[in-house]
Image 1 (cartoon, rainbow, N blue to C red):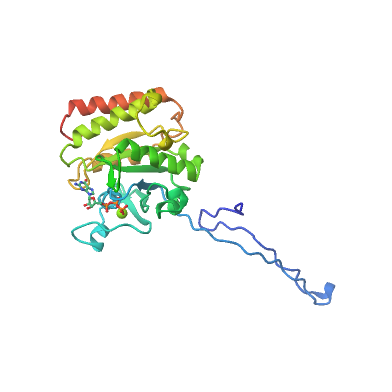
Image 2 (cartoon, helix red, strand yellow):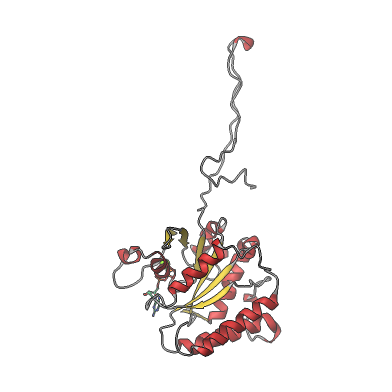
Amino acid sequence: MSPIGDLVKNGDSKIVAHGGQGGSVRNNFFGGKGQSQWITLDLRYCVDIGLVGYPDSGKSLLLTKLSTSDQYLIGSPEKSYKSKRPWLDDIKFKDGRLISCVDLPSLVEGAHCNDGLGHHYLKHLYHNQLILFVIDVHGFNRGIFRKPIETVLLLNKQIEIYDDRFLSKPVLIVVNKMDLPGADVAFEEFMVDLKKIYLQPDECDLDKSILPRRLIKYQDIIPISCLQDRNIDYVKQRVRELIDFNYMSKRDPDCPRTFISLLDRVMESRKQTKFKLL
Ligand SMILES: Nc1nc2c(ncn2[C@@H]2O[C@H](COP(=O)(O)OP(=O)(O)OP(=O)(O)O)[C@@H](O)[C@H]2O)c(=O)[nH]1
Ligand SMILES: [Mg+2]
């Protein structure tokens, strides 16, 4: 089914069926019948940023921190609740700028076969200017264990399966839960794995079936702790830079050298601030 049109801005319109000729003297006041057509309306949010990730990676808490709202706490004061529908909020900046953000229900493996909720909601990435992958520094462990690098590759793959045009959008990786024991070592391992997958994909001991055909060249990799409010301001700053002071026109999405130098820079800055967040 091909789309008839895309209504994005206030006032946009699209004619889907023409009315019949009106009755007048010329046709003896016998007007013609209008056209009729069944159409499906599909709502896609027009939001600047989309948060995507595995369950429990901290997407909802991150949006709460970025937007400084208390919505997260309304569901359950102590612990998380599983997001079953998208949640929208604005990131507010001191100069009054608002950047809208949507927290999408988590993606799980096999979601493209419609096993999970998340895949259905990927359509909301359509109008996004930026995608944030939120991952847990210790990976995903629920029945099946996935290392952080595997969660990133699987998110990349699921987006590719859904619509590979989304892969040309800029993507940031936010590595959450850096407050947990062993997080620093896990983060360094993740960075090494990430670099390896780009430089020596054949030497990676990963299950080849999880590899996407096209690897995303990320705009940045930021270790954070939502729980301890660490690096949240830096995420806000990077998001603003990427959206407003548009680096997108300047960036070359297919330049691996630039990406590898970014990985080296992140690793270097981690060495200098070892066992501390940036
Ligand atoms: N230690 C630690 N726990 C965190 C951090 N961020 C989130 N959590 C916890 O991780 C759990 C899941 O957080 P959510 O924000 O609900 O995660 P989510 O990605 O929205 O989960 P789904 O809605 O199921 O996809 C909660 O118990 C949070 O308190 C963090 O930085 N550190
Ligand atoms: Mg959630």
